[in-house]
Length: 556
Ligand SMILES: *[C@@H]1O[C@H](CO)[C@@H](O)[C@H](O)[C@H]1NC(C)=O
Ligand SMILES: *[C@@H]1O[C@H](CO)[C@@H](O)[C@H](O)[C@H]1NC(C)=O
Ligand SMILES: *[C@@H]1O[C@H](CO)[C@@H](O)[C@H](O)[C@H]1NC(C)=O
Ligand SMILES: *[C@@H]1O[C@H](CO)[C@@H](O)[C@H](O)[C@H]1NC(C)=O
Ligand SMILES: *[C@@H]1O[C@H](CO)[C@@H](O)[C@H](O)[C@H]1NC(C)=O
Image (tube, rainbow, N blue to C red):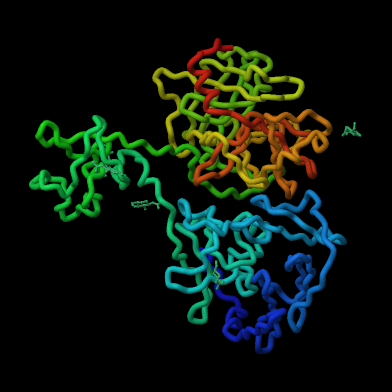
């Protein structure tokens, strides 16, 4: 993988680096023929190459620094608040040099650090495989110290801070463990035995799902649930009442099966769910336990996209298994109508403006699990629509409350069957507020460009950031009305944006290892215009669905 490219001839120089630390500056100077200067800013611990320049905040002053042959020279410069283009994460405050907006720094709130305050200094463990880990652990399993991702000698590696997408992968001017390549856990480069190699880091995983809920039959459940469905207390697996039974803590493989000195529910025999022994009326019996099932919403097997096209990247449905395509039959011809989002086996959200023509449900069709917009695929599941409701406060002139809910038709209570290509997204916990500029994702089969006559033949994805409310205003959006039911998100690189035909599709953001639906693609001023975000409908609540289900509104 990332080590496949061989070692460059400069790599061995590091062994000959000398470090000189002074109060005001420090530098590493390479000995030998290639006189290479690398500076380390003692205030920020960041490293810089010869002739690099940067800003730093030192006590109350903003300083402009350069890396020169004999170290770092800095002088105080006037500062000002940043223009809109520069951004800090996690509510950091942005400051730029008065004379040049190319130079800016983020002043981070306590608990955060990094060039853009993207580093979470309080993160003590990693979730899942740690792809979203942004903490500061810098030691490997062998006890070695991690190398700074911006080290010149790592330039020829596949993963380093010089990549165009380094910020998104969490790679920067620091030596913290990261998992940019979807490996099994965070790792870093180390210098060992005259070689650069990678090692996994020694930081611990966060408390894990198999401790709180069950997946499948719960064979791997190792949590502390200790009573049965009937409310009876479980007997300990090492209890004398269980002597002579097949399953107790005296088995040779007891530890493997999770049957040790405790009374927690377990499923050592591939029963339908975890169980335990209980005493009832002085008699020993076994009973099932009601351990809650883990929700799989918002999880996926992400497949890296290869082709960038205008307005996004060609993608795979497995990366966005909640994406729905809604079709409508008009005069016998089936036409693509809008995107949608699967939020539950039988429920799909979309945009209200897609349904202003009040189509009869018999003309609608919802397709899940399809990468190509038009061509049937083996992985897809197709449904007719039982009914749909448009938000009762939808305003067509402003697109306020631009949300609609479709119920899929099924013979049983299940509609969509969960597969790697079809899975609901999670609805956010009430009150979930992600930091401004959080990077999120949009997907859809929409047009590549505003004036194109054609929809995309294939699912696309785009990466956009959440705008602060203060920057989601009519001023930015050709004076169009912006209501509290709308949120703005845009690609600050001005590459990705939603476009015609994406409407009704998802804006999803990672939270606690699962993708959460933050918005529904609603409207925009053109597509992907410089500095103009797209607008999304927010505020879908689980309550809304509950109401729709219980009041069973008339179908359209
Ligand atoms: C590792 O991180 C700690 C704090 O997070 C820091 O004090 C230490 O200097 C770092 N070590 C190296 C080698 O960068
Ligand atoms: C969760 O814990 C179980 C058992 O304790 C372990 O087998 C599994 O690998 C862990 N999973 C993750 C993602 O850490
Ligand atoms: C069940 O577990 C809880 C905490 O996990 C503990 O307080 C309680 O005493 C346990 N009950 C029995 C019967 O062991
Ligand atoms: C458990 O039982 C199910 C259903 O019979 C079966 O599909 C699965 O392979 C079994 N798992 C193990 C580990 O035996
Ligand atoms: C928005 O309104 C302001 C004030 O009425 C006006 O000056 C400006 O030209 C308008 N902008 C657009 C894009 O219509």
